[in-house]
Length: 122
Image (tube, rainbow, N blue to C red; front, side, top):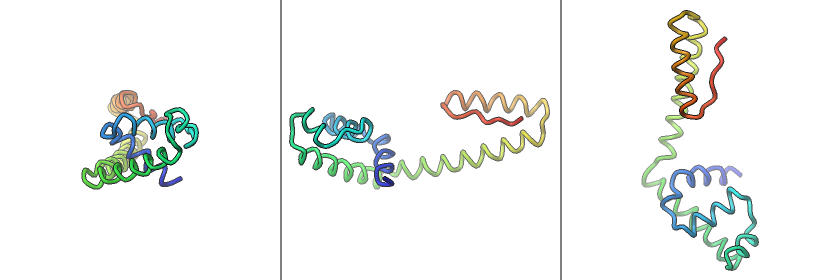
């Protein structure tokens, strides 16, 4: 399960670097939860070739990340962002002034733009 989560994170970052067939097979397996047999039937190939493709894709995605390191960078940025937002939210709650109301509105706009959850401070 943990390996699948890591694979999906890598897939989100590097899937454009896979071939169209590799993207389709990995998408069907991980995002649509189809079995090897179902994918094999749909693609007109053997279960073994689907399994081989998934294994090859895992290795490829790992290699891309070893060379480029985007997953580690995004994880660190996410951690830093979360810590920053916690501090800013705490500050807004403690100050509760007209100036911090404007700051909260700006933060809410950022959250909406990036699809994040809006943090309640009241």
